[in-house]
Amino acid sequence: MASKDSAVPIGDGVYWIGGDDRTATIFEGAFPIPEGVSYNSYLICSEGKTCLLDTVDASIASKFWRNLRSAMDGRKLDYLVINHMEPDHGACITQVLEAWPDVTVVGNSKTFDMLYNFYHVRPENRLEVKEGDELQVGKHTLRFYFAVMVHWPEVMFTYDATEKKLFSADAFGTFKAVSGALFADEMDFDRDYLEEARRYYANIVGKYGAKVQQVLAKLKDVPIEMICPLHGPIWRKDLGYIIGKYDLWSRYEPEEKGVAIVYTSVYGNTGVVAEKLALMLKERGVPNVAVHSMTVEHPSYAVADAFRFSNIVFASTTYNNSLHPTMSATIDDMEIMAVQNRGYSVIGNGSWAPQADRLIEERIAAFKNMTKVGETLTIKSALADEQIPQLEKLADDIAASVR
Ligand code: FEO
Image 1 (cartoon, rainbow, N blue to C red):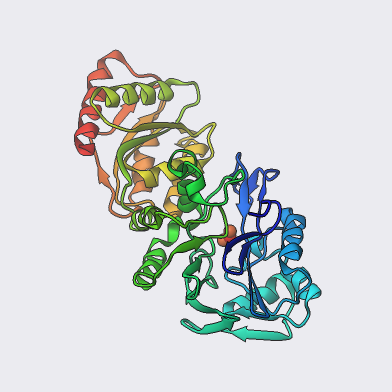
Image 2: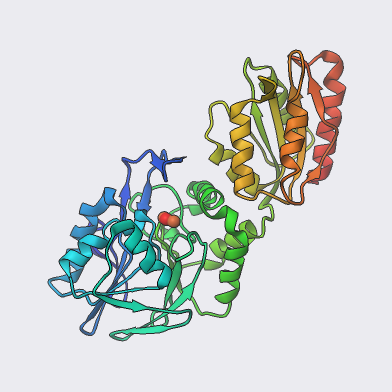
């Protein structure tokens, strides 16, 4: 196999030509990526025809060009398929058009609108495709499935019917650089990548569960042997694992019985209650408890665990007669990403006029299908000894709900 710093064959005339970015610390200007991210691009070279599927982010343009030139080996590019126009995949499109001005750009009507809006280009040769259209690239028959809002409106998946490969745009992708392993079966995905795959899904695509369900239903009977996403490892074994995760997440069904305790604490007293509750839940046999301190964590981690677990506990101090801004931002993000169908519990703190519990309730009322678990616990500054039975009762109720 070729070095992974050059094109890697992943099928008959199909190459991976992506790369890792370990220099970026923020994705989409919003999400921390402490372990980097990878960008995948793919190339088909077959019987005199060549086809590039998406490009990459500007940060890895030099790697992309090294890989692309090596795989092209001096040939001309016939087609550029744009499955997704977001600039983390489209940043090199204009360079490709400059390198091969005759290339036929393949996309849908929204693709070409976005291509103009972002880069002010209208390619000379355009092939506008519709749902189910096919394109022959040498011996590869490519079929296009629209995947609207997974994660932008122009997104489409390209299915190589000859190779049974699905080029799935952002779907089935993950944060975290791939560290030399190109395929999911070359890593311990469940141990080392699932958390970042879930955080990626929940925060990037999570809002569009219904659209993910539509595309999963559309592909149900399509024979797929390899899933090639635009981020993260390629799937060639146990495809049901990652498809199953997407099915659960997009139906807003919890992946596991467990509790995410999401708290904001100014002087540590609400944090003490959150940690005491976590101990009580473990004592009661709750299998998974994750405590998130939102004053130091990015909301994307709490959003990911809201997708993972069956129950969420919100614990916040009152701040200027409102919610603490970090709790407010966390609930904002959960609402935007359509967290729903969970058990929830509330702990509010306030030193002279506690408002947090009421404000949390008001915010959660805007979520769909949330079930209140246990009585709200309101504390004034710090948990009083005589309130411990109330906290015990809340732990009993949450443990019973999780069971
Ligand atoms: Fe990886 Fe929606 O872009």
